[in-house]
Length: 65
Image (cartoon, rainbow, N blue to C red; front, side):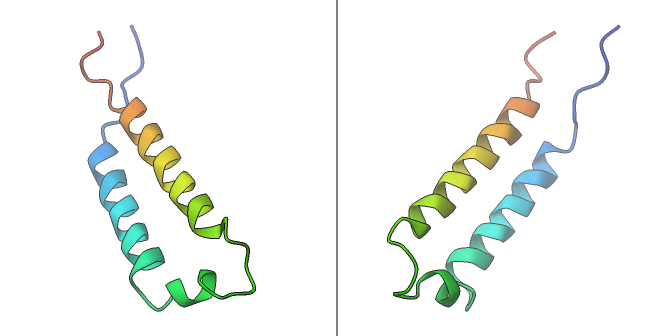
C-alpha cells in the first residue's frame, strides 16, 4: 500500500499567495526594488514562485492511483 499523498496542497497554495502579496505588494517590495540590487532580482523571485507552484502541483496528484 502506498503512503498517503500530501493532502494540504490547498493550504500551501494559500501560503504561496500570501507570500506573493508580501513580496510584490507590501513595503517589502522596496527592499528588492532598490537600484543597488541586480536587475535579475525580480526575475529570481518570480522563478522561486513558479518553482514553488510546480512543487505544490506535483504534490497534488490526486488523479494517479
